[in-house]
Image (tube, rainbow, N blue to C red):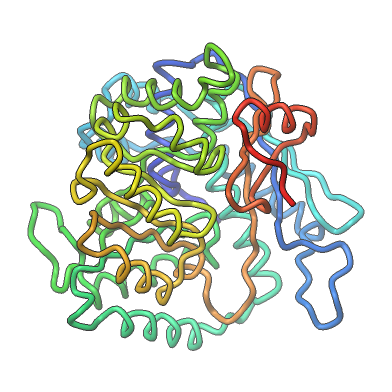
Length: 411
């Protein structure tokens, strides 16, 4: 059994789920799976990412996932977070994932189709564990004797790159649950990072040695290893607001306002790439610049993004040094160091490294996502600054969204 706890997911799933409970409890949604590096006919010598042979195994793991309930110590841990409310904990005490809301289908191309459809409140927790299941099932079947020696060598190399005096203020976090090689490897990586880099802050406020490891997005490992759990919102929250808000053009503003209403100053990092940076900056006015603690980058050129966001703060009479920029798009340690050197001292910085931490053993990782494509029967979309990350199953809606948000056609 791959997933043994419902806490084995990212913190932002719980923060979004609480907002859904309080503000959109009746919303109905649909999510679809996509493997970005799957090819129906891979080139000679290229790795095959056929997932269809493992569909039955994936279904069985999902069936086992749906037998889980939150345990009392897990609920107590969530309750200890100042932004988690007691009625949400009461709801989680009764919660379990329902298998009827998810289907896994093998396709003739060798790919699989995973569709999640049902109440948002009851389907939101599927995404991360299902992606972790797909990854682990694939790799344990295709790499049943993993090269852990190579994985450890690569991890040591990353750590040594970070452990220099000039980088003592650089802090990284683990964002790698969804694409990890395996749960066991994920835990090993975290334990090594704690031992070698030191945690930024241990329970009780004591600083760790070195203090370059800021924490993890994974709530289970945060609880188990005494790490800081990290996360705020994901794309699906702002996407759903396309269907839930008063009008489409105001959906990004509506999403940010409902988030602020829910958390009253906590979890104040805005996601900037649901419609691309141009559209984000048009909506992220002086009010939001002052209200939110910062913004997160997840597509497009990170250096250009950072410069534009800092300039936007200055134009809106906000000192960028009081705001946090979070970088989380396909980061490697060398890229993280480059970004740190460019922006250090000009703002607060945070770096979330995912696949390159938890799935770097010398094999090409799966580039898999599960994204919301409908809410309340209406198409919703993500139009990021990296076109390959766009996801929508309705081309007419996509064209309309571009028009409404003044987003030029690619190419």
